[in-house]
Image (tube, rainbow, N blue to C red; front, top):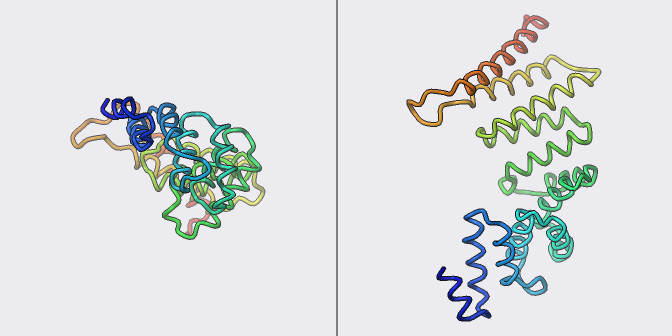
Length: 231
């Protein structure tokens, strides 16, 4: 309310729009955040940090066309900007251009010198682009890396499992290590399901899901032991 009053008193006070955008963003009102930030930022003169933030707000607001237009334009000023590269990859994937998204993902993953700049979502999109391009084994490996970064993302374990299964079903040279790796994903998925608080009883659905994951792991490990008992 205070920020809106400041803007009402002085509509030219653009700093208030930037701060208002932060408030909307924290409340997950992304369309309002993007609209407010558009009054703060200048595409021609603002620094890259603000432009990357504006592109991010546009992306989360759902205005992918405008976000892509901005990313394409300002990337000319800083082609190696990590935020702009990731948004370019995300948007092309969401628009169904999986070949281009894979190309952009490989560039992002290969040219970021500091891997700490990469986030879980980067790996998830990379894995999805690999899967969409029928690179299922590679997709499974990247899915596994992503879920290990964020063990709360149980649904992503299912994607990793699905990618591994598709690879095993289609590959001509499946190795025992592939079954073992799939077993590890099953086991990690099962082990990740825990009560949310100490002393809280696990729900029946969570308990059943955990058991299913662990049964899957046990079956795969048993297959490996049977085929290579000396391992």
